[in-house]
Image (tube, helix red, strand yellow):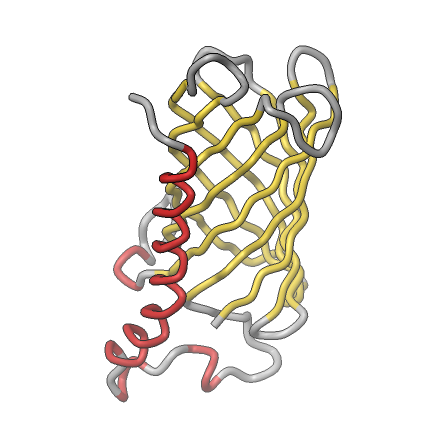
Length: 199
């Protein structure tokens, strides 16, 4: 399967803008008086609860074949669904785009990996603190490898463990460690930190 990179970026751009535009509308229409979001009646001692997250993360791969640092950029959106509250894997569905440099240097090269993925995230509280919570995140998608004669598309799997530092109901910092596997390429890890806006 061959996917044009400019076309792929345009499609994801439209999905991203549509999600930003429709998420608040859908959220408002779905709420009846008995479905008021938890954060409306929340006291300062209660755990933060949000329905939609927009995240931008910067990180570094410890890349193949040795522990070589490489740039890693990730942008995406996630939405929490009530019907998934009891799902053991998570209640927040995510869609994201990731660019990873795979060539010479750190920031960017022609040899890159462009990954579009969907995922499921599970948020959980930590003992004795409301400011920091934890999460697990499983992702599956397609990585398009550039720099060769043809764009190569491979299956991608990512598994992450992270911590969220909550500044308030709307702003937080995510810190995560990810185990990544692209089919035909040895596994590698990524350490990332990013800003998240929630509503």
